[in-house]
Amino acid sequence: MRKLVIGMAMASTALASPALARDNSWYVGGEFGPMLVEDIDFDLDPDGVADNLGVSTHAGVDGGGFVGYDFGAFRLEAEASYRTADLNEITVGTTGLANGVRLAPAGIYGTRDSDLSILSFMLNGLFDFGPDDGLQGYVGGGIGVARTSLEARFGSAPSVDDSDSGLAWQLLAGVNAPISDNLDVGLRYRYFNAEDVDLVTLGGRDASDTISTHSIMGTLTYNFGAPAVVVPIAPPPPPPPPPPPPPPPPPPMACASGPYIVFFNWDKSDITPEAATILDNAVSAYANCGMASVMLAGHTDRSGSTAYNMGLAERRNSSVRSYLSGRGIPDGRMNSQAFGESQPRVPTADGVRELQNRRVEITYGPGSGM
Image (cartoon, rainbow, N blue to C red):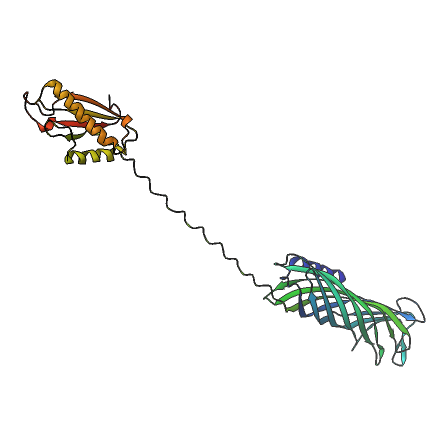
């Protein structure tokens, strides 16, 4: 039977789950369950012969309460418990045992109205193991005092009816599982030992032995410290969207290479207001042409001699050149050529005055000035 109890306790420890840890807090609880008492073999004095009085019991019960403090991996608790079992048989040794007014001979006797009870007060130390946020087991032990009482009766009067107090110790193992933030249920195995229990029989003889029990108990524990509330950390805000790409730069203005044509009064080379407007536009357009070359081509109509018209065309080029250089076009980028009356815009007979032929043409870009 003892092997069965130990096996059940070990199996329960392996299968059950540990409770959520509540470090640095107080707890209280209760325990209750079946108990087995190891067979007791009292030594009777003054005879000193072993096995003078044997006692076996039925299965009993064990229960109690505890209060403790959880330091983290280690717990310290105070416990008060009470266990009791009815006697099954009494074995009388060869010397006999007083039973009422007679001496019972050696033999095995059934009992009636007989029981064993132990009241104990213990200080326990327990070590927890397993993850704090899951199932958790524990092992430990305790030491304290126990008050053991025995009433053994198989006749009209009890053969033993006495109590004794003394040192007690125990080994503990168990598991806990949370059912709420504050409540745990569990299973606890207890091996209990009451040392050197010394009782007096009806006949005045001392009966001494150590009494050992095995208990498997369900437990219910209330924890005063609830798990800390975990405040979720808000995720960081998403990064701002990237700024829209800048608009593409406007395409570079194409160089308006011309020709820009200005006209002159008959036999004149000065710049007219109309011609100045056209030249101003030509100056503005040159800003998009970089450092392009500039070509000035002077022309006349056919109203004068060929030699005179060639000189007049050169004077008209000079007027335009001065106007353009005065408005920012580098003089070194300009070339001019006089064509006189050789390239009329409007063909005419010799000696005819024609405004369209009295002109200077301005062009920009590659090949200009050649």
